[in-house]
Length: 116
Ligand SMILES: [Zn+2]
Image (cartoon, rainbow, N blue to C red; front, side):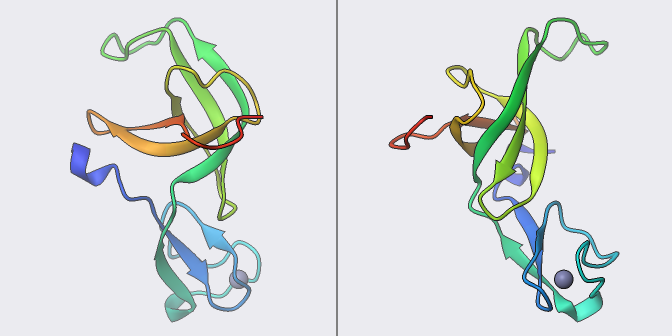
């Protein structure tokens, strides 16, 4: 993945029930089963909230720098994903926003947001 491809985040929104899914998929809405043209491509804000996080101290791929913080993040549009988080993101409830770091998706602390 190139740095340019890491952002923006693209998902699909169901025209039937409004549920948003990330990443883009075409197997049907997870809530109501609508598919095909009922799944509308959307660009997501990249803003979310940390649900939980942990620190990886050893990784089987030596190219992955450690320690690395990994978090479960709920995007404001609803989908939950796991991704790396940047320095200063240290607790559940932190407000974060998506950024690209060398082509890798990393969520950084969101400036101007209430962090707890
Ligand atoms: Zn639906």
